[in-house]
Length: 365
Image (cartoon, rainbow, N blue to C red; front, side):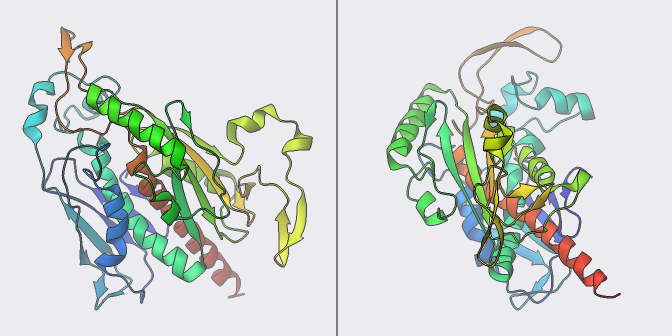
């Protein structure tokens, strides 16, 4: 089903933006691991609405509850169910939009697919749905970090035309990212981004941006050939995040402007293993991790729901002017940072378990 993701570490998310609760079921988490709500809550708090003056005004504590799969703070190996209540629901904010599909939103496409839709807040197409991804990703992130020494850090690198200075993917930390409200480690650029987004929020408009991500410590050999390439699964996961419109690994589109003699990553011997002098490949070659930092860029479009008047038509084709109500982010990238980290964790966790299973099977013969 389309609400499930992963092979061995499998997650299934549920809930709409204005229903009673949202959450996720994790199947395949190894037993005997330490896990409490305190391990999951920090990432959800980074994702939650209403956390700053440049985010949506919706106020949700987003407190996670573990419903199953643990006992006395240890995982049992059985499905882990995580739930977050929707407390600040205002479906009436959307009553005037019930008959008018919002431009560039999913109202029309969901109606075309199912013949019915959740008319308040976008239902499953809402970013509220990402709570399940972040909750499950926090579990995967804890396992990757504590068991395998894998670190994942994402940050905002641009908002609209405002570009930050390049961060060092080898050394950047989440603490550095959290020093600014917009989660950009370049303080000067961050100040300009925040002022720009605040102005757009006041105007009722929106803007897009780019989130960079690095995954450090992934050992060589992680990933599957051909149709299950590591970058293909990362692309699938990242482009499943609401409002994403672009994905790059390593040099990405800029690499198309280079010659092979410049773009190739020569091998060298470092840290007791083969490594590369440069990292234009972004840590992945042939769909499999080569041991270098995996570097990603994810493009987010401007949020579709804005309060400025828009000339459009209703579902029967009659002309209409839409002035959207409700509470919406003027720019999603600050809150997208933990979502990107969580999605990366889910992909890598699944691939690590698949490699471990392959190695265990090989040792039987």
